[in-house]
Length: 268
Image (cartoon, rainbow, N blue to C red):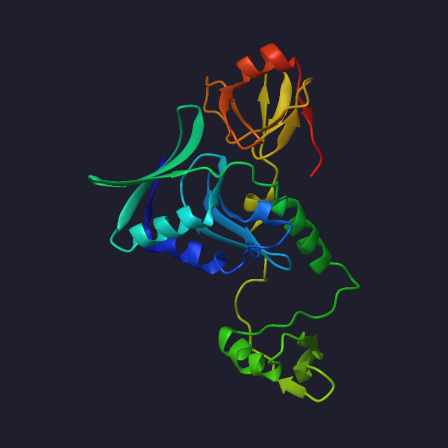
């Protein structure tokens, strides 16, 4: 449980909300926004067929992950408009994950979305940030929102626009065979892009009964039922698992192991 300014929570929702799959896309099982908490940050994660977006804000929270359907995320975003500072709780009720947002007597409860495909965003971004420092990677291209708005008119029919760094000269912009542009370089006095994200991207392992489990990871038992670990338990608490199907039932790990016998970590 932690408290957060409503505008800070709304801001990270707004920054990732445009990144989603089309309703007719075959991969729309990933069409959910993920709220993911670490001890230092609350993350909002979203993806489409071509993009991945992660925004974060500082909190003093626990360790949990909960997928949220876009309809529920929109309802939460609207509720935040009339709020100033809210308390956020990750809870289990009637064997289902929920996120509870409270300000005084006002409250909204958001259920975790069932049957959402796994999105290994931490692993993907670790690879990207490692590649950034590789000797074969070129100079970064830095554009602000106003720049993107200007260059967006270069293509009207959905064609790709290419941005290629020319070092101190600027950035070459190409679009279709009949458009060339040059963007003057920005003076960037901020931190290196991606710097300071190590705490958000590290794995979230914890030890239980002599075995390591990871918050957010998926496991299969001997019956081939797939389970997700939604949160790292507090001291002395038993971990819970969420079934990765439409039922999305949450059970103590002891009940799962009584039937499933063992858990095998799934890739991804």
